[in-house]
Image 1 (cartoon, rainbow, N blue to C red):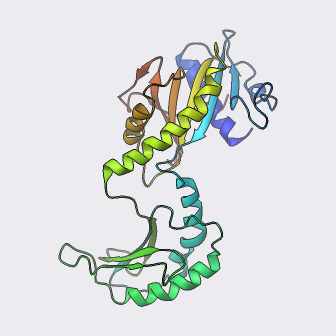
Image 2: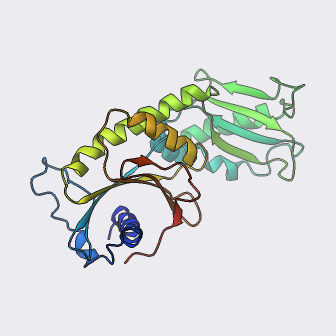
Length: 281
């Protein structure tokens, strides 16, 4: 079973229990590769159909959610292009400071960038600039950081220095985000709106099955359940929704799910409606 379908099945296992319609009947048959009948060419209606013991069924659709357009690509590119620098520069930077190398939204999005060439350009630049920066503090800003522009580097980045703590000389690669919280929320709402408008029609076509949307949030750095919930409510205005919406936080060591919407009600108590994912049926 594909990971997406397995995630949907684990959610269905929980939902069948709490709705009193379990156990699931022949759940692995639900991962039917022939769910494309009647759908537009190259598309599927839903990710999983799970029959229930009462003769009904769950129709479940899964998608990964982003905090902004291109976030998943950004994450892949950061890992491919920049994160190896943390290892490559170990022992080469002054130990009385720690360093952060930040790339803005979309700064590394070009998939034509060659990792070896990018790091070959950044390595001497980081080593040179690291010697000149003082550890960040209210008194030192902005002398604690320097911006590498596209005139001198293949990608635009910001290098900053901070007090050493217990990691003197270490480099941390990260993504920089807009400092304006409203701007960040607008970006999040736009992505949620696209997810809902893409996924809901195929789910609603599966009525009278109980329709379930599983939103997988893999983002540890820039996301949290509260912000996702707010963005979802804003994005959902004026839309016909499915029966139940889950947010599954797969960035956790032990992934858990939160029921954020059920039977026409937005659920505000995240602790009450959070549960560990059960093993697949």
